[in-house]
Amino acid sequence: MTGEGERLAELGKRRGFFLQTAAAYGGVAGFYTYGPQGAALKDNLEAAWRDRYVTREGHMEISAPDVMPEAVFEASGHLETFDDMIVECSGCGASHRADHLVEDHSDSTVADAEALPIPEVETLFSEYDVTCPDCATALTDQPIEDFNLMFETNIGPGSSSPGYLRPETAQGIFVEFPQWAEYARNQLPFGVAQIGTAYRNEISPRKSLIRVREFTQAELEHFIDPEADDPPIERVEDVTVPLYSVEHQQADDGGIQELTVREAVDEGIVADPWIAFYLGLSKGWYERVGVDMDRFRYRQHLPGELSHYAADCWDAESEIDGDWIEITGFAYRGDYDLKKHADHSDEEFTVFKQYDEPITVEQPTVDPNMGYLGPEFGGKAEAIAEELAALAARDPDAFADETVTVEVDGDAYTVPVAETDFAVEDVTESGEHIMPHIVEPSFGVGRLVYTVLAHAYEEDRVDGKKRTYLSLPPEMAPTTVGVFPLMDKDGLGERASDIASDLRGTGLTVTYDDSGAIGRRYRRQDEIGTPFCVTVDYDTVEDDTVTVRERDSTDQKRLRISELPETLTALRDGNRSFVDL
Image (tube, rainbow, N blue to C red; front, side):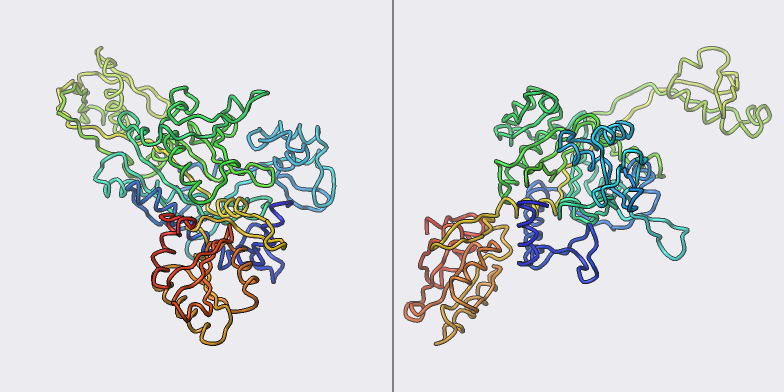
């Protein structure tokens, strides 16, 4: 950890943003505890996300359990495919993530080793003489293997009911889809959102909050009819987005393209309009919460790094310490998840789509004569009848001759067509069952916390002295206002305490501080990002006014106490500007 990382780790612990869990017992890699400031910042980010992606878009929000039965993850494919590459050092026994070692030893010349197959990574181990970062033992001859990242547990006593801590919150949405569809009155499109904890048994957690074993996700699963539902692209078509496409990543002179959402769709750079819509919608949200747009881009996944479920995927990335960090994934998951759960369960994961007017269609049917099939085929009769029905649905021409042949358990059975009672009937249908496709924006809340802190960190000089402050948007700041008495005597402390209490009563987050010189108190609030400070002085006693100081500029204004609640609320919500007071 260097540069920004070191500064943030020191600030995070000293000022109560985040710290390593269980430090009294030596700490545990990949787990962090949010302190008072960090928890408040995280809550504010989540509230802003909920406002943007749930409330304003009219979606529903749910909260599913962290532990789910094994069958869910068998169906989703996580037990089979949710792997990272692991290598074990023969010298010290430490385990490391192989793709990270390649990237580190190549000085980031190899930027996406995660997308490479194991044989190629083994070749790169030899090319770059990869060694163990703990003891410097050569790792070039050590086997590289897949390691499943799922945390396993048991549900109830014993081991008869295995379960897993969820590696993503999404499966808790998918597995209950039939119920959500009912709540949505089977009307597509609709979205289901969730903010919750996910768990991944990372091989080598690193970079503070960037790669951890327990983290918070904010995910939206937007269910659409791929044949009929178009996004409201006109809402964001003029938004300019910084795109780093596959083509530009693979080109020698490729770079970020600044295009409007409409241009990105029309030129086919973002192939799916739904993904483009969410890229445009989200850009404004990132700006709102304090992501520096000069250190931000949307990067398209290379073919080798696409998830097993994704037809296309773009990552929102922020730059920290010279590295680009994924903070959100925007994926078009198709019908992969619902189809998997439909195949593995007894539920229907479809929505009934009503036609504008009923239609008449020809429908092949069979009603096999079991009085013939039973004596003729014995125990296979029922299976043969089922295969005849399936064949009629998919290939009615197979019944054009006097006999029809079906296959059961690898054996062929020939049945007279007359004994199948094959017919083609006219059937009136009022609609059809369709399996929705899924568009998923998935946000890493911890990485957003880290990004916002890194991008807000500023240093300057005030009155000839160095000052550190967090230039957080007021809406995101853990505390909106600090209230100080100039001195804790002559009734100033009591007056300031009353003001702090009254402001809390209006819903503002307030801290009261009467310790030390006033300049030192300002610095303490600056360092945790408090945007406004109110000072009660001797003029307050005379005219019921106070000094209000703005964090970034350190400018001060004089306001009446009666104006404080409305004014500070408007400043926090962005409805007023400090310079206009």
